[in-house]
Length: 168
Image (cartoon, rainbow, N blue to C red):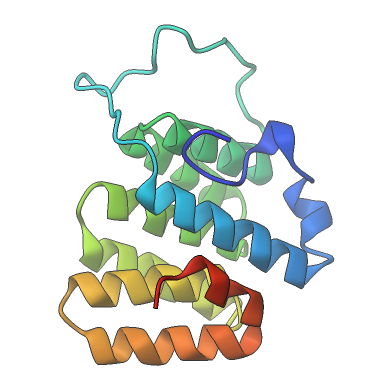
């Protein structure tokens, strides 16, 4: 799965996952963990890798979001942000997209923007635990560890499975 656990070509479509919030939370939680700790191979010219296969231009919000995730998985967070922005122009009600933007901002070393996007995801879905994980990470980077712990404790109450993906 490259840099993240969620890959559009290798997993259940997000629209199907939306019907099962537990599956969505677990899948995206895994994505966050790997995306936040995974590859560090960003191309210095911020261009797609030469081995990337040409794909049709995305048309729907979900396709743009998935495209952004593939770019993030390739270590191209700036390009991913462009795709996430296009997805949000088409549909601003997908917490996944805001949360993915937060992951991209983490990769770029911008915890303030990561926090803003995690909060946007939580405005759309107040129990979206992957956004809580991203929020906690941003808060910790900003030196707000107590707040981060509080957010994670709420996430663990909503989705106890998340605990096994975090070090004590």
